[in-house]
Amino acid sequence: MLRIILTIVFVLLCIAMTVIVLMQEGKSAGLGAISGAAETYWGKNKGRSMEGKLEKFTKLAAVLIFVLALVLNLKVF
Image (tube, rainbow, N blue to C red; front, side):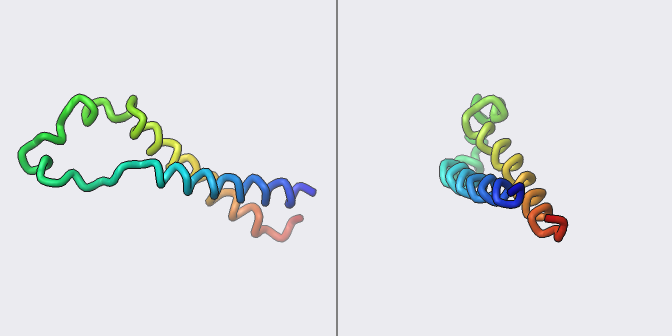
């Protein structure tokens, strides 16, 4: 029973991770990075912006997926 619940959580987490990654903007700054235009208000406060939050959720989801994959592959269940 626990294995089924963990598998459902794993699948939902994988779907959420896919959506989070697709919501993020590209990392290429283009020609603006050459002239220093990338250092704007949003660049300095990236952790507080929506893009910064998406990056944090992506890292958290990746760790959770990794841990759940390890747990689901144990032969304890």
